Amino acid sequence: MFRCFVKGCVYIFLRIFFRVKIKGQENIEKGKPYILCANHSSNWDPVFLYAMTKRELYMMAKVELFKNAFIKWFGRKMNVFPVKRGKMDIESMKYSLKILKENNILAIFPEGTRNGLKKNGKAQNGTAYLAIRTGVQVVPVGISGKYKPFSKITLNYGKPLDFSEYKSNKPEKEVLEKVSQEIMNNIVELQNNVDDKK
Image (cartoon, rainbow, N blue to C red; front, side):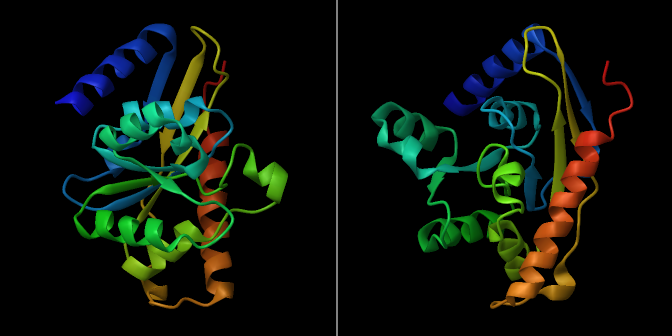
C-alpha cells in the first residue's frame, strides 16, 4: 500500500511538471522476469524509470546512499537495495538472483554511475553476469531529455534481448564483455532514436 501510494504520487508529479513520452513499454510482458537496463546521466533517471514502468521494480542503488537512516528505511520500503560498486558484491548478486527467480523485474544502470561511459569508457559486467547466469531477458531503456520543468522526457523501452545461448554459472570474461557491450549499444541507440526531440 505504501509503495503504491508513493509511486502514484510521484507519477502524478512527473506528469504535471514534465512532458513525459513513453515508447515500447508493451515489450514488458506480465508475469515474466526481466532485467531492465537504462542509461544514467542524472539523479532523475531512477525516479522516472521507477514511476513510469507499470510493473513493480526492484532497483539497485549505490551502498553509500544507505548511510542515511531515512534513505535506508525508505529505500527498503520501495524495493531499492544497496550494491557495492567497482567489485563483485556477492550479497547483492544473491538477492538479485532471488528477485529474478521470483519472476520480478530488476532495474540496473549498467554504467555503474552517472555518465559512466564518459568516465569509464564501458559498461560494468554485473548486468551481463545476471543475464547469462539466469537466462532472463534484458529490456534496454533509453532515457532522453533535459530535466527542466515542463520539458520533454522520453523513456524508450526496447525489445527484450535474449542471451540464453551463453547461459552459464561461470561465464568467461570475454563473453561478459561482449554481452555488456551489446546491452549498452542497444540502450544508446534507444536513447538517440527519438523521432521528435523538440
